[in-house]
Length: 146
Length: 134
Image (tube, rainbow over all chains, first blue to last red; front, top):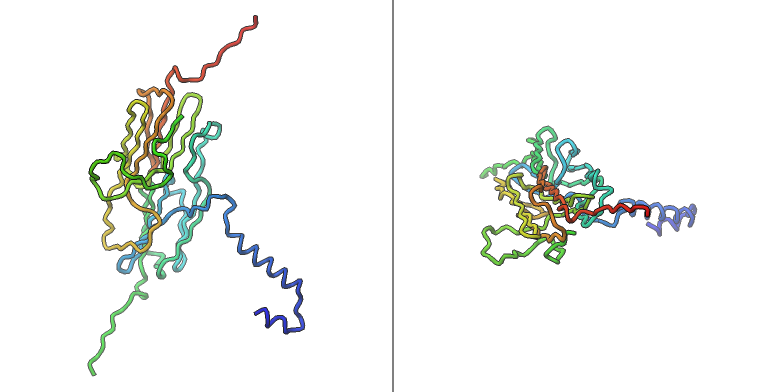
């Protein structure tokens, strides 16, 4: 790629450097600024016959505080874990529970029907059940004996 | 104020009582916040999947034990394809260094989070001493 560019007359080392810097910025933009790089929330993926279920551990959140979006074969879980108000002035002994906004995108093994999604939230565990669209389901093909 | 008994910071805890395990499921350490206000010690523990009725809190002398049972749910017709968290019960033991008014402990459990409000005993509260001008 670089060779192809150098052979041209319009090759400019400064443009090339600029491009590289942009690439680097894009690469590091995805890194969270906080040192805690724990993937949040942790999810489990379950495979059924023509359906997928995703479960996520989201303790402390209610159904209204979680935002779910499905697009083709990706599922995005968004929300925020808010700090406790009275605790701000208190003295801390131990702080392990994650805080702050989160967004997690899970790629699913296949495209799902966005109209056939069931989501349940129980005791801090979110469960999302998705169906494979009728048209995408694998079909058995009869082989004729001729 | 509240010291944890187990020193390992692993999320999986080995059974401490040495007894025969009653379930095959592993036991996890819940992520816990502990903070102290003027007259309370507050302990907040994340126990996703635990129903309010399945939480067990015991305070024996200064040893506080929190336990949460996660129902072994059968995912009918589903195979686990990928897992980032394990399903199992929660257990954690703390030693409190301060006297707690054990008759007025408030415990609540909502959305998989256990909140314990431990009021400090009168003798343990910070006392303000009035200074008189001589």
